[in-house]
Amino acid sequence: MSQSSFRILVLPGDGVGPEVMEQAVRILKHVEAQSDTHFDLEYALAGGCAIDAHGTPLLDETMERARASHAVLFGSVGGPKWEGLGFNLRPEIAILRLRKELNLFANLRPATLFTPLIDASTLKPEVIGGLDLMIVRECAGGLYFGEPRGIETLRNGDKRGFNTETYSTQEIERVGRVAFQLASDRRNQVCSVEKANVTESGLVWREVMSALHAREFPDVTLRHMYADNCAMQLVRAPRQFDVIVTGNMFGDILSDLASMLTGSLGMLPSATIGATKAELFNPAIYEPIHGSAPDIAGKGIANPMAQILSVAMMLRLSLGMPKQAAQVEQACIDALAAGARTPDLGGDFCTEQVGNAILAQLERLTSSAV
Ligand SMILES: NC(=O)C1=CN([C@@H]2O[C@H](COP(=O)(O)OP(=O)(O)OC[C@H]3O[C@@H](n4cnc5c(N)ncnc54)[C@H](O)[C@@H]3O)[C@@H](O)[C@H]2O)C=CC1
Ligand SMILES: CC(C)CC(=O)C(=O)O
Ligand SMILES: [Mg+2]
Image 1 (cartoon, rainbow, N blue to C red):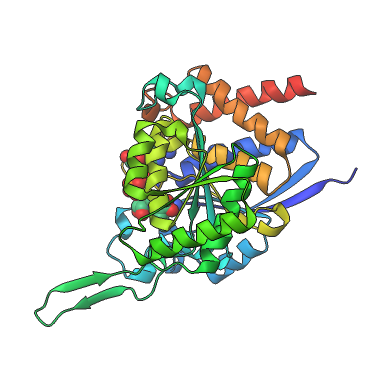
Image 2: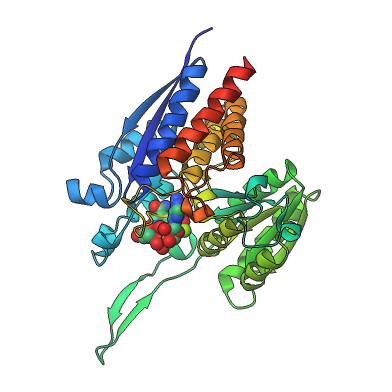
């Protein structure tokens, strides 16, 4: 049997990014050692560290390397050191550009409560037990990209900052299809979230989702919800949701909120894809939903689970290794059950110790599987 080889671009980024990435790469190397697969890991700078080294958050050369990869494993970028730079010199441009130029428009953010963390959730066990929802966040358009945008100085000297939320039929349909197709393999329910009561972009979003549903996915249940109500419902009764599909900013905010239902922001991985079929969305980006966490960076206490679970999503969605993906996820659950928790989950493990615990569980699982 010939050995498969996958080219993976690793972009650890800033702050806690490199700390959690180190643990994720250990897990990836274990998977490689246990399978007939070679991972060709290439590293590059992205974000603030790239600004420091090259004067730009993402070199064109790095963009080219991303295009030539099977998948991009991304950490996180940004931090106070780079605040106040010009608009195109913000570290965050690195991830925005990667998503946009790789034509990746759907950011899948699964909020799954692992049973050992039932006490770590902000909600009561009877409300949260068994939570398994998927947020599909449109990530190539909306308020983060819409034109016109800018800052202008008014005649009286005041400043005015402005952004635009635009969504076209095509942009809504392509992310809507991802959501409906995901729901078909889950509990068959999509909740589409916008503010159609106050924004035109929300109104179009609602109309297009309804038409897409009627035309292509009549067997999936669709309901519409305003974003403010959705935030409340996520805290009141989160298990009512299967797949939530929403625009760029609402998806960003609602997924950070949903992460706390699972115990911590450090628990939520994500996959940023451009279609539902693996062969169509390579190269996709796999990244935790959290940022560079400047308040804890350098302390060695960041939770590496979201980054490691992003590796599991990469194995499943881009590399065709669902068995190994499930083993990595199970190893995380088993490590949590054995008490491996960083401070965000109420524990006293450091990042590396959590990595050790997951690796030990993975070794146990993979040796018993042969
Ligand atoms: N994809 C990316 O690269 C993202 C980058 N950012 C950037 O990150 C920087 C910091 O942004 P914040 O608003 O502070 O958001 P953040 O997500 O970095 O942190 C928010 C809070 O969660 C905690 N936290 C985050 N990840 C954690 C982990 N793995 N383990 C334990 N605790 C964790 C932090 O310590 C902090 O208290 C900013 O420059 C922001 O633009 C923010 C979100 C996504
Ligand atoms: C560009 C990022 C900083 C936006 C964000 O918060 C995210 O993608 O989760
Ligand atoms: Mg965010």
